[in-house]
Amino acid sequence: MPSANSLNGFEDLDTKRSPLSASARNGIWLLDDDVSMLKALGRLMTSAGLIAEKFSDPLAFLARLKHARCRVAVLDVWMPVMNGLEVQASLRRDSPETRIIFMTGRDDPSVRQTALDAGAFAFLPKPFEDEVMVKVIHKALAG
Image 1 (cartoon, one colour):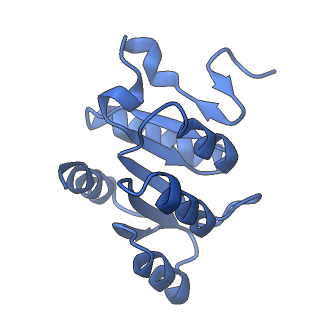
Image 2: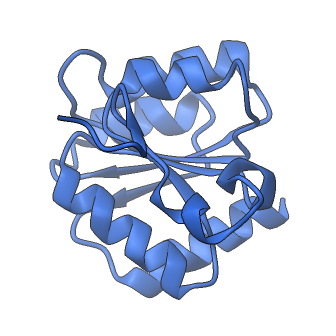
């Protein structure tokens, strides 16, 4: 059974600690169908003093755009239902100001080039150094 903080693949565990929603604080959204990776990224954000909304379902991620602003999206490339490039296309249409950072366990040069040509801010192969991800997110937030 889903927890009170889980809705259609959406997890916002960090808002329990803050009266402001994650999107109001940082606007960082994480999307990965691998729940363990999603939790690790969430812990990384918290340790870096950032708050992120976490999604395991691309459709829930995109539906959230109707209610909140996404400044930086960290997207997995390979997911069932929709891949990261499809999510990127929807973000370009519905939230063109969102900066997109891709991460992938299968670093295919053609996929990397497609993502970057479509405006991705960065493309990181897994595993990546925590400091690299944090630095890229800070650059995306600053830009």
